[in-house]
Length: 81
Image 1 (cartoon, rainbow, N blue to C red):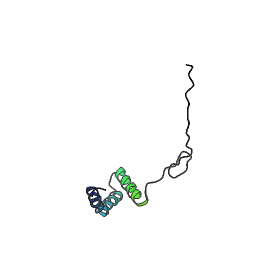
Image 2: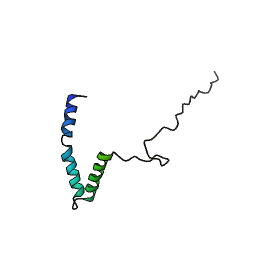
Image 3: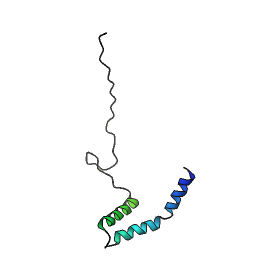
Image 4: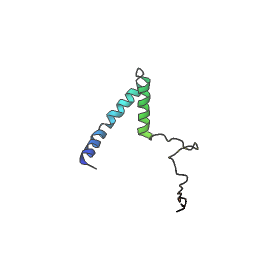
């Protein structure tokens, strides 16, 4: 990883506590816009617990899984030469 990226990541992480405090403040502020409060609450939950899994087509939770892999070889029709 490039040194600049490592330094940037480290600098950003040094502000984690302050950023979380801002999110908590927005979430708890009763006169704040409802969308802002909801966004802050979701951000806190995502960081603390990870993003919620989405059910697949069968209604099952978890990451999508490959059910079947099929390889079909099609031969061209023989031509009359």
